[in-house]
Length: 421
Image 1 (cartoon, helix red, strand yellow):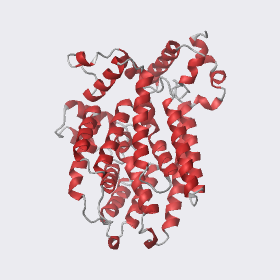
Image 2: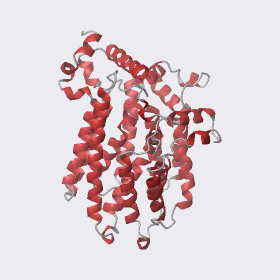
Image 3: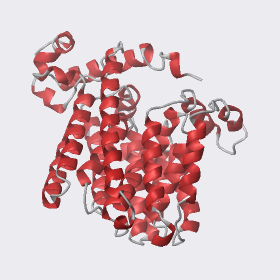
Image 4: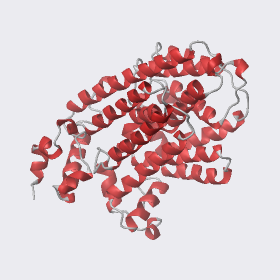
């Protein structure tokens, strides 16, 4: 048996590859490769479908085999290991939302390990994505890669919200199939699983007013103008005083204040947002007679939230996760699979230009993530998978990862003040 210090001192010998020093970066590179392959095989629909299945399985496996990975395990692991049984949970103090508490309690009572619990959440999330992406006729590998490259941290570290996002995707899928009662049950599960869940559910209920109405490009043009204005005007400190007047529970206001601590006026991702808005606006022509579907409604809501809170990237990364899968699917369906594509001049050129821009942005983000991880004191990005159980005891790996997580929260979290407000 190797000592715990050996786990730290010989990272390359345990993985056999130095790239495992940054496991998430490795996953991001794999996803970028699948996105590029998808673009290359754009004319071979059968091949694209086969590539999609490979992409889905590979990315799912890479995420599901992670073992005590990410800084949030410092909170989630002790909580899971000490959680009461379902019958006793109601009489104790719940640390998190009741939906997540009972989810963990039932699995723990059934003898499922912490890794097993994260595997269940990952499986639910990828299953929801697979069901959603089945509606696309083309570019499924590109769609999946985009979602993963934007939301890799959701899958790896944010157990509660990842579960809530998966449930929300199932909620909308049930709406698409007009199974309203079951959709309402899932929507309630979203709300009690993560405190941010009330936002997409409440806005979706308001979106009922748009269902079946005629679409037009006016709203998207307004969003483009507003976003361009936000890139020029430093309004990042306006939201603070407004929070105290919101009719929300104290815990919600506290969480919002925390997520408004970081902000930036100019961000590279703004080019992506503007490009997507422009694509939707151009393809949402008045004479096309397109009506609002649930995918269109979720896309509109998601883009409105992104524009409204554009400067608060810490907050947007939370809220965007609920709507990102729908935005990706809607845009690809609108610009690639829609019958009205031929009516839009130079549609293929614009679509390809945005796709290339996305590849460049993801490459830039991956390089930035690699460089950012090198500046941390805690090696939180280093590989930790169930494959290491062949060489090290589970308790040793757990203790090592918990020490890394603790060091991250003590020495690295929000220590960079360049983006603090």
